[in-house]
Length: 136
Image (cartoon, rainbow, N blue to C red):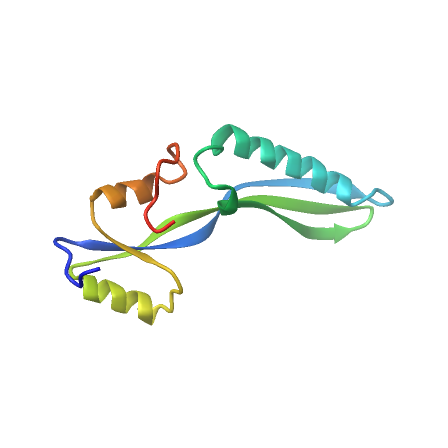
């Protein structure tokens, strides 16, 4: 890729973003996996309704947390996480964009011209049907 791109460029980096959070309770003596399974099934349903076909299988997950423990019950939480391209900055020169990414110690990133087809595809990832996303 050339070091010169016309116009302002944007630096994108994939990051895990929280899309939904749900909580449940574990009562003393109850199998702790039961509330997690209920919450996870609800999260999978939310994903199927809102994001299936818009997010790749490798770009979403459900994470479990136990957030509060006090007998007779504990509160558990699960989060639906999506890996989405996040715009980290805009620059007048491609070289400055690369230097920013290097200084920020980004392992992987994408530089695109602002308002280009690639820019629109990155911003639309997760909200439109997948057709092809640069750098993925």
